[in-house]
Length: 96
Image 1 (cartoon, rainbow, N blue to C red):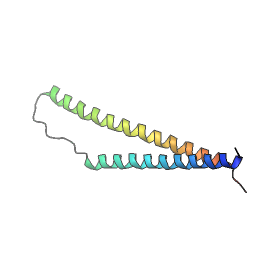
Image 2 (cartoon, rainbow, N blue to C red):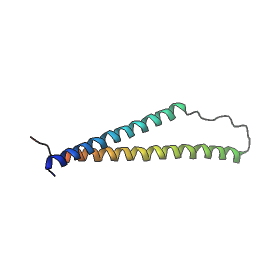
Image 3 (cartoon, rainbow, N blue to C red):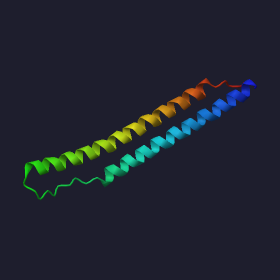
Image 4 (cartoon, helix red, strand yellow):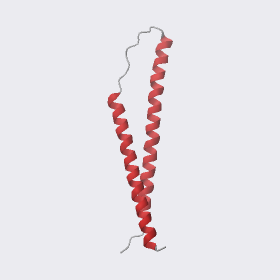
């Protein structure tokens, strides 16, 4: 195999990783923005029992934390993929 073929393949893979990373970051941003715009705090609590109120509040908080965790994991994965793609493109030999 010639050196230019390996360089071309590495460049193509690097550019593919960059595109994949950017797409993943855009999806995470869009999902986070959509969740932000659609979120409404449930203020209607008909129970007067403190334990019920605390349980409902804990449920809402855990639900939000799970969503934030998944967005954070997807954001980290997108950033890592994007960074690896940029590193691969930087290391590809350039023909002059």
